[in-house]
Image (tube, rainbow, N blue to C red):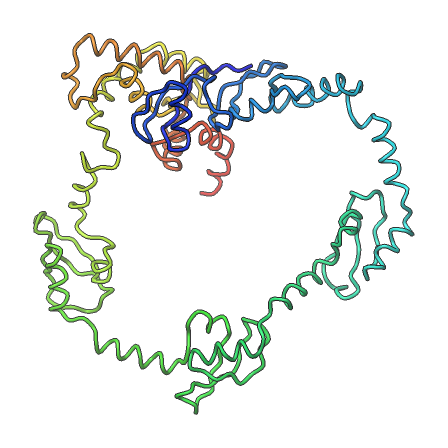
Length: 454
């Protein structure tokens, strides 16, 4: 039985036309909006709350899966949890076939009997046709049996089902060799690759990781060894490489060049000596002269860093990607209101006052749907603007916001009890925006594994 009545979606190009046809007013892409469950599209992947019709357990399902499990083509249109799937299967089989299990049907019993009629001798002959030796005892066509490949007797024991043998499968090691031979490069191809890198190959090619003797077309008096893997990576003659490195040192940057690069970015270099491009040098940003910072010339030229304090300015306030028009003041006010509300008390009672993962007394309450998303939906439902200061709202508007905000919290469901540690761990993995029920279920399922990786 479907329990969810409303859910939150975000506007996107694929579903925009569909939901507009249902009477919803488009605002802008990625904006959250409240949707009735019956208006969701058939392929919607949003999770909804469903009660099992057998054990009455409440769980979450993808909406499209819920619809598919209740299509008219099925014998029984009931919702069931994972534990009750056998019960639904039995009920369906009784209605459709008159037995609880299809294994009890006469045709299925006969099919299994026939599959066991092959003798050990017949199966052994089938293995011999494929140059394999059967050493295990045959039970039935879908049970693996042990066999030996005469070419690879010293390898680990191999197993295969008779069904897979008939499909053409066989020795694992023979298959690997066939693939390797098929993809192996020719001697001519390898010689050409060495020639492109200024080398002449002297040995026969075996594989990509086997060293081979070669000579440089310039330094022919010295024999070197190279693998095809190193050639493929762009390596060539060692002596030529050293000469190129020496030439690059001649063309290295000077202290004057470094000062010019820093001045281009409104920085003042305070070092007296330039060493190389990888050595960090101290500098002062002209906008923040009270701080001495350091950076290498390489990172400066490539744009990998710069003034830390200028970066903070670029990422805060209205410049931040998370800027939502100055919603923080209202958000803080509503958080205080919510902690004293009936929804908060009902949520912690629903969780039995314990963390859902550790079983310890809870310390914090986690929103399955982001707090900020619910706040934005509240203001859109009431057609109220986002004001920077809480004092910009009238007392009547604040009461309307409180009432609607609390109502939507009940629509979206109870919060989840966490300890501070588990709550912080969740947001360190999944972030603090666009959190979903799928992330929560995944976190609860894999928490022990996550802690075990420390």
